Image (tube, rainbow, N blue to C red):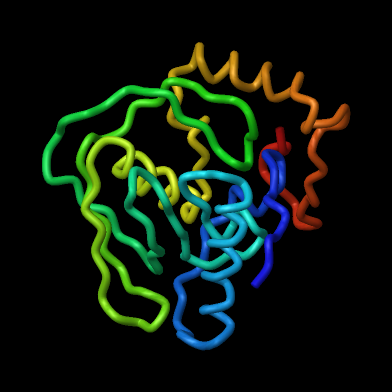
Length: 182
């Protein structure tokens, strides 16, 4: 399969809600393989299709000996216990910030063949399942930071070598808007 480039913070695809998968075909199996190859190459814990520029509800994971993929995931939280710990993202390389997440997560969905699948996660596995599902909803872990830490993170991103010197280019809608884009 292929190792593909990971989209970085500022790419609009990272803020879009991904579409549900309805076709369980060869193309989907190739996407899962490409996600897996790219995740291994990047040495990450999880990778969602939008991070490769593909707006489908698919992610792969490999954390604490638990690996696989999930399509059209839905999360359930069996209790209210939380964890706070460092979190990073392949789309925001090299930067880690304490992020509050649920300690226990049950993710249900289907596999690449359309068969029911479930992943039960605690600690880092739960964190990964939540992080990758957030990507499918256009949410970045930065959105989960407290305001002071978010300001620090955005400052660090502006200073990161990979961010370049220009602001991310965003294609604005030609349709009138009620408020200016900021």
